[in-house]
Length: 297
Length: 205
Image 1 (cartoon, rainbow over the protein chains, first blue to last red):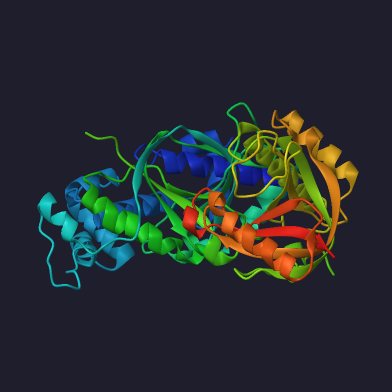
Image 2: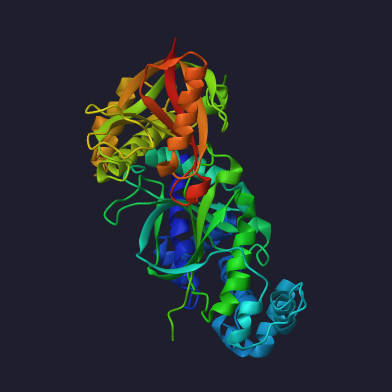
């Protein structure tokens, strides 16, 4: 394949992958997605498997099961409801598929994570279910705020693999945007972390290296765009090396969220890098992390 | 040096940026900066606009070089030189109305003037060119300087400045150039009491 053809295929495929991540609740049949990517269904099937490393059906199924796992871990929706959201017709079929992927049935998976969250504090004070007792929890050194954000259009390059290996995506993105004048005027550098590293295998973690662009701007050829939806987000500042970001997400999602009375939204978490990792000592790095919240019911 | 090895002027000149709470005399060599001039206090809109223009240019120039495979480098820290015409400007004292400043980012000598105009054109084409054409190249040759590390809010610099000037005097030196600050911390999220700033003044016998 010529480099330009490859680039064109990658861009069309990325459009499909973004569509899948935004429409996981809908019918994601081969024909519909092939049309979106301007391929024949037969050709699309081969292109998808070849470039993503798993078939379309397996990809969609895995994302739905992983999303169900995140919801088991962080929320308290009944398993039957999660089965339905993941596109399964019955509790049993969901449990079978879930067990095959995660090595234990949904109920056990939830209990394991619940016991982590409700671990007794070192002082021996146990958490009650009442709001009044929530102040007795293990002190959390994370200052969380809820903010309402406008939509952010971003140009991005996707990295699939361990999060700490995302540097190449930045190397591919920034020079192209810089040359076009798209890094001036307060452009933000942000990372979208689609997957939970405790749930998704490292080689399948999806990370998007992003730069905000104006709604009217289009990035240079070969770069895709997506829009981070407007809405309420829980946010906190992570101080220090990027290798510690996982711990900050774990505190925000695993400790703050369950006690906040709010539910995690359906769009991905993202982080805004406030300083330049090249010219900043790792311990001085500042990163704002954002977790989407479901609107209050 | 291959293009894989980034130039990092802050690390390569670390003797010039060495500073502790105890003032010291340092030798500062000739240094090239991207620079932009303005007037007003650091809280003014003009100051913030200049910071935006300076960083926009710094990253546009760096990434354009990288795009075409030219020598890469690390974008330096924000620095500023302050002057006031009406009266002697004493950092830490109430700021004079006509406080003038030059905001600067140290930049390798290999960056050429043509790269600046190229960056201005790219930024303007995307409507991000505000102030970009005011950014210029400037070379400073400060020579011998007295220098101190100030930890804390910018408003509380007076004692650090006083200690710095007292040290120069004790060494038989007098201040011969404008007050220079090098911002090591990012004020957006750093607690004021933890802000680290190098204060510097050129001195001579």
